[in-house]
Image (cartoon, rainbow, N blue to C red; front, side, top):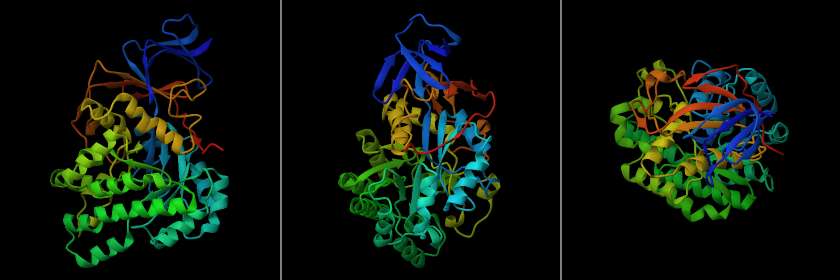
Length: 444
């Protein structure tokens, strides 16, 4: 007897569609059954006419815990994730303190215990003290982060030599290193040339040239070191061109974000501080190039870079646009924004699963548990009803940011249920039951 049997849905995996009933036991998918096959279960869920998707895996989010919990914390951030169909959040290490030592990573794991609505994988940051790596590896974070610009000196790898030396520590390893493709020399030079504090000055300090050079440097260094890397959000035509020409050099993947697929620099005039983040929004032409790359399969992962700040922090006066706290919320709207791309026929539902579930699970060391609906996998599942539309609204957001840049958008589907390891945690837009999320670690 199954604990739960979901009947009548069309399963959506990255490979396509399949009509199956799904039996769940002990938190895992126990069986995929032919539609209507006789089976007994303690609870039966009628999902006729709906799609059943694996829970999404957001590979790039800042939950702000510890140290910055006035902006977000483990509880509020994972609440937003649950309501948005994200059942696994991969949390970045730039809190306070940055997660750079084994002790800090262990403390962060302990801090999260009992406070998670969904599962969370933690990412560690590389500092200039590379002797810290072995202890961090013992704790099996889902990835390490390496920064090449715009961070404190202790975490800055500003030259190709520095990047290559850091990556050598992971030669032959299955550990993934995320790299944000910036260029400190361009940022420094541009800032010295233009001190006007305008939006244009901010954009010039982080131009497509910096992104493209950062991508090229990351790929060449990874090839030299035989390391696995993941290039963080790209959003320019020049960056896409560098990626498409050089990606075969190394074991590498790349991500972008929903905001980079929908907004361009002209939108600063409407939303201003609420859209301020790095990299800056680009031209409409760059957005078109990024969308073309997504359609062509050149983008491996779409993640949110969920990075909330309080409304007061965003609304405060600043001497320069660059001084506005960078980042915006995204966890609660990842599914809906991706469904908007489905509505626009840019991607399909299987593409959505590939970009936001299977690929991030595979790249970040969770491939045997997350990212697909298959026997033996965690029963993290979403019931999506295509017969009803849904609207994104500021009033519904539970992140401490208190807004979404996608306010007022409508998509032609509605998320009706979210399951985490077989237990329903969201029903009709409301969180139900206790917090059952756990810390997940890279599979060995």
